[in-house]
Image 1: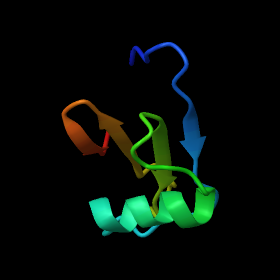
Image 2: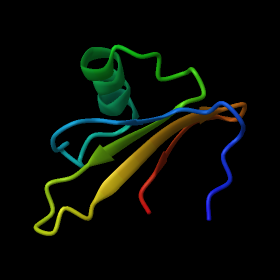
Image 3: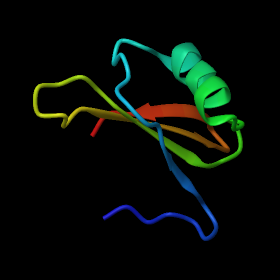
Image 4: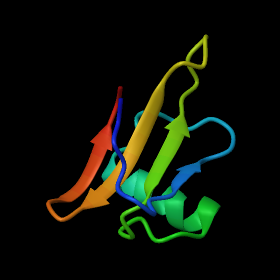
Length: 71
């Protein structure tokens, strides 16, 4: 289970995302596609092109910096 701080929003990017994208590519998508600030402390979830659609990346900013998680 993932415990999220109170008030954190989780944004899901519509469609599929190229999973080769790193920090710069994903932050660009957050700004362009979602119109949000990637450094706001919110979570941004991207879905990959896997056959089963089970590939995801989560972009998050905290007090330590920007993180990409691939569960």
